[in-house]
Image (cartoon, rainbow, N blue to C red; front, top):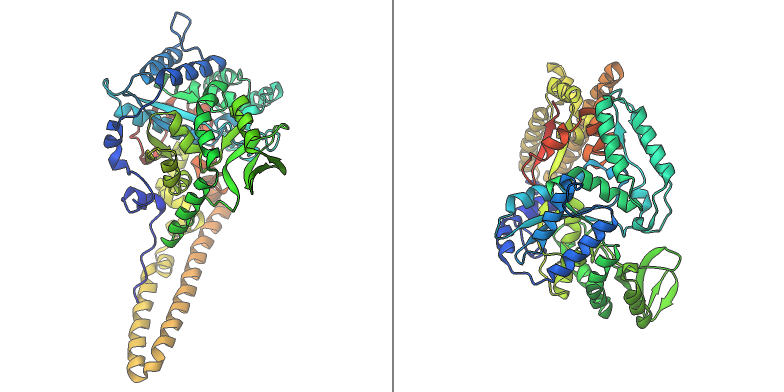
Length: 531
């Protein structure tokens, strides 16, 4: 029996246009989406963004005192007012010191894609949506860095639980703690001084989310990035009509999500979003500052055990719309109600969420924009690049199976023969021939021999993998090279860009990594050797 082809990843299937029932567009539709008119009160949107940037203390005016990033911001907001303007949006939680490297990669991808698409007649601007409404402090309170002495730094801040990070005030002791870390970091002093200047600029923010926003702007503002915090009062007010529309039929969106989840399951994929009975797509921030899911219990709403009438929730929305915030099943729709979005830069997890949201977009009278699989970068410092070259492997191969990859690379010819898949292929052919011969003698033996073949080959494959990894671990005990590569490429057991902070590379190599990043093609997957 020929084994079934493995199910392609959701991202690969999306790129190939195989999931059109779940997505309104594919990346191939980007030009058509750009040409689709979008009605929007642009002057009001631009005024709200100017108010936000002013409160963030990022002046968008010109003048002698304005730096290049501020002048660029002013020009970008002027362009956003253009009736044909579109945006490319990326977004991320407000991670410590910018969070994992892919936060910067996503923001850079929005800049790169917008730059590629923009014309004088139809400007395209990059916007970075800061998930300031998120209340999962555990995901944003720590980060990872690695210095030239290969010492691992994992700072962690004590953040209040259940509170939107955009409500958490920045503390002076956190500034002192993080600047002290930079002082201890083994890296050239000139590079540390530049990063220290970035951080001192960022730490002038009033809230945890402000600090993140100011750092992202410091790194990419001169390249045209516009930052956006949905908790800012002027921007939250613009989102109120869409939130009110969701309140009118609070279970319709969750029902659409559940229907899409069932269809995804039928296609063999695991849905990332589920909506149990009574759950809405909204969170309510209570008087105690805690953000909890809004549920429907009969004819009333309920949040954190407290009942609310519809009129009470509407009153909260009217008085302070920032207290009613979207869950993951609604957040992109609120984003694209506010902005003239042509493309949304997403990682694999976000794409999986988006696969269930087409129907929710339709409920709000919107068409889902193009989902753009994000730029993915693995940084190879010179010592790491030399080790990978020596072993003849790529970073991606190592990340998939560290010990096994190293073991295969180090195997002697005799060991390689024992570990090679050719031996298993030969055994499989022999089993197949034997099954055919025995079945000819006694047809009842065919299935039994086939089961024996599958069990035996599966067990031998497991032993082969174990042997490869044993070789890799033995080499690590001798030279420490496996552990060394893991520190760089799999910090804390995670792929590099999902764990390592981007400042690691700026601290050790100056502006070179950022310059290299901004020279990439949007949406590419690449391993970059830092010279």
